[in-house]
Length: 316
Image (cartoon, rainbow, N blue to C red):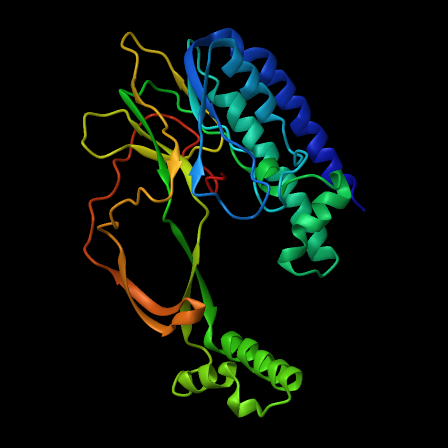
């Protein structure tokens, strides 16, 4: 049943092993930051970033590229992260593209089995663990490596500490969830269904059609990101989630690097100037009417540098 997943994973392991034997010989410079593993599904207010360079950084990266299992004490649902960069004498873009394609093959094999078994999308991690091992971490396994066949003039590492992700849900699905919650609460608390908070929320949706779509907003855990400038534009050419080191090629002039600092939740960032205006529908459930951007922004510069950036689904 799990042979296709296991076969795709074996090919991925072989490709990563070859890559780890090759890329360290081309390193000109590089730095990574070791972040503490989370022991609970909440990011602490302070995260210390330990700076590693030289052979220590290379060794840490080689381990990180093949680390797909949760470490001892690592909370489920959290990931190991090793932000950083390496400047290489030769491009490794094609090797990295091959690795990312093999990661996608693993994901496709998991999805194929899920459909064959007629399981819900949330079953993907369970199928992956049954195929590969109980401690395997889906995000660590499937996230892409980022590589640029070019030399940036500037690399900036920052923390995205107040980011939200948005999804879409129909009013019919929200009604179904609220109705089930109201019935369960009424039974549990021996009260009238009309007196439950869920029923009151249902009444808020009375004038909305079942087919109407709402925006669902969820907080994203703080994560490091890297912005790269290849052109002379004031706007970055690429911004990636820095879960693993970024690979770039060397030039006569080394890139300027703004290094990653410790994460401090209390050192709040300014609100994004492109934040969307949203109308709350159910504020305690973070459900909103679809909104428009406060103002139209100039798009990020489309760099001509060949890279893994925005390829496929830009896996993290």
